[in-house]
Structures are given as structure tokens and as C-alpha cells.
Length: 318
Ligand SMILES: Cc1cc2nc3c(=O)[nH]c(=O)nc-3n(C[C@H](O)[C@H](O)[C@H](O)COP(=O)(O)OP(=O)(O)OC[C@H]3O[C@@H](n4cnc5c(N)ncnc54)[C@H](O)[C@@H]3O)c2cc1C
Image (cartoon, rainbow, N blue to C red; front, side):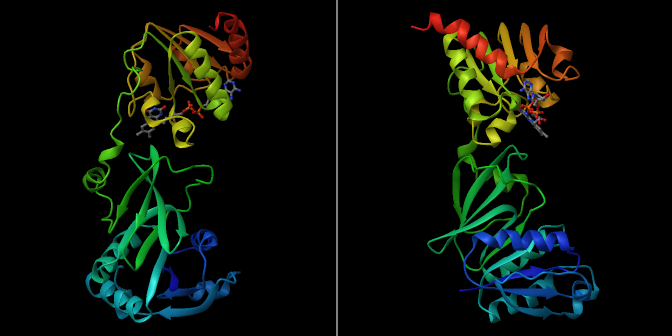
């Protein structure tokens, strides 16, 4: 199957290198299509990876006008069809995010804009993309050929994992919220274990340092007969579940006692704990916003406090 990278007229070297990075996971050889005037690339230190087997130029008269739709997308679609490309990758920007869906409509392919990763397994293409105001990253399978994607490689997502396989999709359409939400019925935040009405809530923020820290907080919660909540980064990293996220886009809690470990106390999170009667906070940064709304605060490494608490509570276990 032939595949190609499109370099748009307004792409800079950072964009292009990002495109090269994304094809590292993808087998096969690629063509590189330089669209419009890309003479500047020849003058720069433009390193073409081995996977690129040939470089073509695609000129079109309408390039003198703003990148647009209609005629331009039709002629680009025609070109992609002639070359039998089954996979087309470009950088994501205001132009490409309208151009590519438009090209895909002409070709009746699959298209997704602003993807953060692309993988191929057994001749199927899987992409990830932020959804829900960038609160989670979701994985999609793009089913029709050609698969046309724009990549949002500037957002560093290397440590992110897809939270959930959401949807097989034949097409996209770009990014009005209504369209996304109609496809994401399974992601409605559900109240699973009574966090919303819990009398005691422990929150693990990013400062608990990964899954081990989160697990310890969950263990303390169990020993205290409390519920565990979390902040957005732990959900994004796949450590905690989406329904555990406390905040304006998660669960609003109203416990008698709320214990927060290693959160900066950012406003969207603070909104979710505002109704707590007493708030305890642990943060190693004395300037942290968290201390602005805590009734009691400890300035220290929260992993020490968490370990001490566990030691204190273990004897009461069982
Ligand atoms: C539209 C929108 C909606 C959002 N909705 C939510 C939401 O509902 N819920 C939510 O949580 N976020 C939400 N966010 C994200 C929010 O803005 C913050 O980015 C997020 O809450 C930060 O989480 P955090 O405090 O755990 O991480 P960070 O902001 O990274 O803070 C970590 C803190 O831990 C401290 N720390 C680090 N190491 C240690 C240690 N060893 N011991 C003690 N302290 C330590 C650091 O000093 C720092 O203050 C939303 C953002 C947007 C834009």
C-alpha cells in the first residue's frame, strides 16, 4: 500500500520533523509531497528519513489564493487517487484541518484531525486524539481508505495512554463539539462508587508520583472508610479512572473531610472540592495555591506523609 506525507506551504521544519516522528511506528515506505512553494526546504538542513522513498511537488494554480476548498481540495483528492495512497498524513493547522476533511469527503475515506498518535496493526489504522476539552485521550479505528489524518505533534503526549477504546469510525467530521459528543456516548462520567456523596474523600494529585503513590492513597482511603478521588493528570496518564476525577469537569464532592495530596489546587480542581467542610492539604511547595483554601496544610513531601499515615493505620486493618 502506498502512503504519503503532505508538507503544506505554511509548514515549518518543526512540523515536518514531527511528521517524520509519527511515521516511525508505521511500516512501509512513504512518499513526501511538497505542496506549493517549498523551495525554502531545500535551503535548510532538511533531513529526509530512509522511509521516504521519493519526493514529489504538487503545484496547483489555486495555491495563490488562501488554502481553500472547492477546486483545490478536488485537485488534491484527484492526485491522491491517481497515486493510490491509502494513508495520507499532514500537520494539523487551521488550513489542513479544513482541507483534509474536504479532500476525504471527495474520496469517501476516513479522516481525523489533530491526532496525537498513529498505529497500524494487521492492516488497520488506529489513532488517538484528545476529547472532552482535552481531559482524556481516546483511541479510534479509522476504517475507510484512504485514511487521512492531521497530527498535532506539538503537544507532548509520549507518556499518555488511551483510556478506552471508543469507536470504530468511518469518518470524522472535524471537530464541532456536537459531532464529537454524539460519537462518545460511552464516555459520560458516571457515578460509580459514591464519591459524590462520600463523607470522607482523599484526593491523589500529580505529586503522589505515579501509580504506586495513587495505590497507597487508595489503601489509606479504604482503611479510613473514605473514597478516593484524583486530579486530571492521573486520569490522563491512565493511573486513575475517569469517574474518579474531582473538579469542574469531573465529580463535585462535598465531604465533611477532604484530604488532598500533591495537587497544585488549580481552579478547575478547586471547584470540585469547594463544598468540603474541612480541607487538609499536603504539598511540598509553600507557594502552592492549594494552601489558599486549605484549613490545615502540611508543607512536605507527600510520599512521606502517605507512608506515615499507612504505618499508623495498618494496625487497624482487619
Ligand atoms: C477546561 C478544563 C477543565 C479542567 N477540569 C479539571 C477537573 O475537573 N479536575 C482536575 O483535577 N483538573 C482539571 N483541569 C486541569 C487543571 O487545570 C489542572 O491542570 C489539574 O487539576 C492539575 O492537577 P494536579 O494539581 O494534580 O497537578 P499539578 O498542577 O502538576 O500539581 C502537582 C502539585 O504537586 C506538588 N508536588 C509535586 N511533588 C510533590 C511531592 N513529592 N510532595 C508534595 N507535593 C508535591 C507540586 O508542588 C504541585 O503543586 C481542567 C483544565 C481545563 C483547562
